[in-house]
Length: 333
Ligand code: TRP
Image (tube, rainbow, N blue to C red; front, top):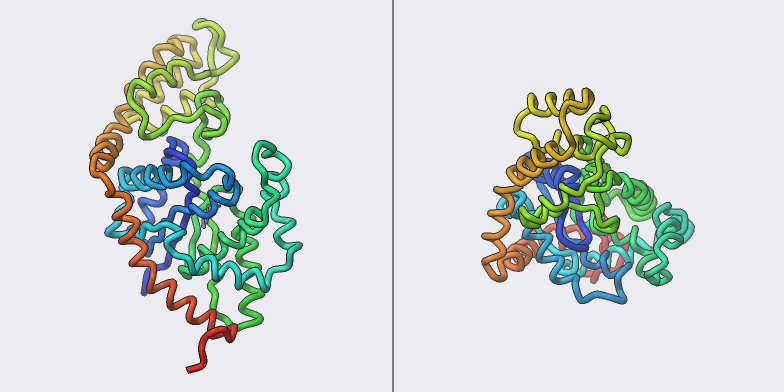
């Protein structure tokens, strides 16, 4: 039986964090063996919200690809490409806009939320309104079966499925209804302040930062707020230090011991932070070495993207030929 297809995209918004590592990268790395994998940089999606400040998109694209590669995403297995290298995505998105009622886009929850909450950017542009359809086009153009995403993206997958049904109903069964999946284990890595790790909260640990930077962040992390003194018993279940340590420690018995001594007020948070610094830096060492090697080869990320664009091209051309024919916008031969 032929392999199913997995596809996912990231907006190039900066270097990747420990949250991405456990929330997506491990999953993407595992899936490239069992699926035909398509992983792309959604640089047009970055434009929809950051059209007033586009200067960093190219640099972030490169950084993201380096992070993927250092994390073990293998260009010999996964097709790694950049959205803007596949302009047919815009064409498909335009065709999808013909069958999509405006009301469907107006009621996408992230649209309303972000319009209300993000006040420092102008999101009144048509491009931002069309964000979900562009995402649908990304998915459908590669005939993806499975799309791993963050929980906040599931409504976009639902919209995509509705659009597929309407399109297929009108023009024939030619688009595939994709299934959205959310990463389970470690999907929510806490940041240094205990909230979800996110660049915008300023609480992120970056995969590619230096050991000293990681040390400084870990040493200033918050722990169980009820544990003011070393003699106060703590609750590891609500302590971000413990949550991260569990994910990166090579030794489950050490974790059990930190858990015990925290509850018994037998050990202090500073000692525990020092232990986490060692384990976390140890956990990321191989990644960081590889990342530095890759970054030392100028242009490598762009070569990978160019090769990926070549590989995705036949898929795109075959799907687009079907779509144009079905909609009678191809040439009559
Ligand atoms: N909207 C996604 C995000 O912000 C990024 C994205 C764009 C995407 N196109 C996609 C994810 C297609 C999955 C499939 O995370």
